[in-house]
Every structure is written in structure tokens, then in C-alpha cells.
Image 1 (tube, one colour):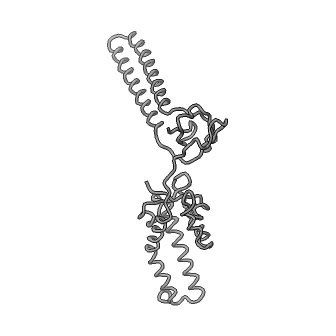
Image 2 (cartoon, rainbow, N blue to C red):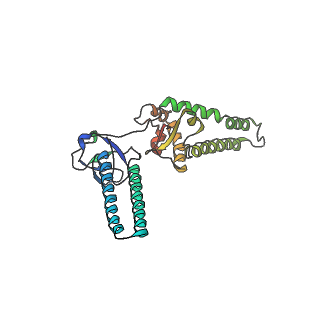
Image 3 (tube, helix red, strand yellow):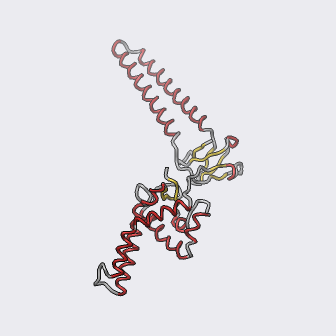
Length: 259
């Protein structure tokens, strides 16, 4: 059974045996009572229907005191008000049934409900091999930059640059192009590089939302840490619970299957 915090849009799944328990949402830190969403919706409908009926009765009373065209006009106003109230009711019920982010834990305030009693709805994390294929595709796409740097190294391109300056130029080109490629694509509306798009995965924050350019940049440069320890930081994506590499953990990001 899905429930939603009454103070924020956080949504969870619980068993029906925990109805009536008071819990604290870790997203907003406020307490609320676990209720049945179906019952809440029905109560809302009944309450709104009663308001419509009361409004109808009140307007009928004033309509009866009018004559001729005035009475007809009042009746029309009653009908319009009742229709508007019904539309508002449908809108509220529709809004209450929307899906919201579903990934934060919820804890018991009075010990009545344990953490194990709740099942958080999680995202589908991208596995190691899917991520490896995406990186391979990105490497192929990046080949023109690699060939350009090789031309500089061989002296075919920019032959007037020699020695340490040539090495420095190659490093700057490699680092800047790699950084902008990853950070711009992963912070875009697609949330993925071209390689990730090809295999159907994307980068998100811990709540499944789009990341900023700054966080995407931090994630990219954290990849150097993953490489410095013998590539173990990359291999971690095959064994961690949320399929995170070291750079994902540092930047507090996830790589998930695109919906």
C-alpha cells in the first residue's frame, strides 16, 4: 500500500497492518499518521459533495425568494457554482494521486513501526557492464580529439610548439574537452553522454533528479580518484548496493536506467 507524507511529496510503501501508526518523515522531519489513501480519497469526495449540497440548498433558498427572471438567474448561478465545486474536487483528487520521488527512508517516532516494516520504492540502477559499454562508446566518439592530440605530439599539428609546451597543450585539450563533454551532457535535460544515451542509462542525484553542471563537473573530476587506486573505484560499481563507483559516491550521484 502506497502512502504519502502529509507535509511533503515524499511517498513510501507500507503493509496495511501499520495503519494508524505515527511516524516521522526523514525528508521533511515532520510526523504524520499512516492512513489508507483510498479512505482519504473517499472522505475527501464525501466532504466536497456535502459542501456542494449545502451550497445548493442555500442558493435554492434565496432562489425561492425571487420571482420571474431573477429566480431563473439565481438557479443558473447555483448550477455554475455547483459545477465549479465539482471540478475543484476532481482536481484535488487527481493531485492527491500523483506520483512523487520515492527514495528516502522513514522512521518510527514511538517505536510502533520498525524500519524493516517499510519497503522503499527504488530506482533501477545501471549495472557495471552497461556502464562499461557506455564508456566504450564515449571513447569512440572522443576519437577525433585523440587523433588531434596525437597530431600535436607528432608535430603534424602545431609544429612550432615543442618540448614541454607541446605536452602541456595536449594535457589541457584532453582535460578540458573531456570535462565539458561529460559535464554538459550529464547536466543537460538528457542527463547522459551520447554513450549513456545509446545504452539507455542516465546520471541523477540521490533523489533521481537532474544534476547541476557543478555536480556533474565534480563527478567527472572524481573519476581521477577512481583511476588512481588501480581502477578499483570503477569496479566498485559492480559490487555496491546502488551500483555506484567511487566517483558516484563522492559526488552523491546515481546512474540509473532511463524511463
